[in-house]
Image (cartoon, rainbow, N blue to C red; front, side):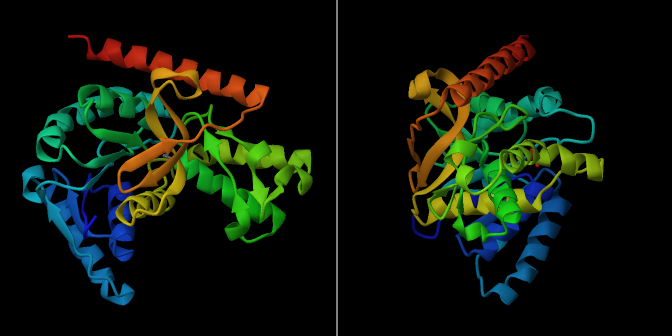
Length: 311
Ligand code: 2OP
């Protein structure tokens, strides 16, 4: 990809944090779209003012009409309501499904070749929704990528080891059912189970699952955005620079792990084609059962979505 055009949809906190991090990493030409013209123009100006200190000339252009951005190589969708205290991600489904549905035709006609990363919650079922409307587009969701970073951090802090030496994976769905794969986590190749106690490992797993809700409950009317922005920028970097990094993105499965016509977060190799491959892990019986719980939850969410979409 030659200096890709990266379109961020939604200039809220997650969208603008992502745009700032993508521009700071010099990944391409950034467009920040929002229906609120003042918001996207102001955020773009603020982001651009930060770039000289980072040696970056990946300028951000604010736009309130999607057509002004032109065809994009990479699209990040953050538009929609964010979670507030007391809300589940599913509470957002009705409103955000309508937002995604209204964007879909313009994305399909304006940027049919784009790799589309969907962030808006509930992200797994909305990934299914968008892929269902635009089956020929390369669409995937954030999945458990943010949760994976939270897990790595928690392991590093507990073991008092640099996070650079921690490898860990979270799969399933970006909700309370997510599966931190503690049996697969390693520190410099040494299985975590040999370095930390069962109690410590259970505590890390719980902290990972509850981190997003903890932030929302602390801030009441806001959810986290700094970490999401950085993780999104890293995924975009893997596409823009063809790095082949591995993230647990949510993709619509075609038989992987035995599932069809549903979206689950599983380890994906991300390169300039988008998701090159879903990696099949050897799961133990408990992990397999937990993945089945995620799959059942997704099935219910897809049914709820279909009911909502009935005329
Ligand atoms: C998070 O996990 C709100 O889903 C978002 O922080």
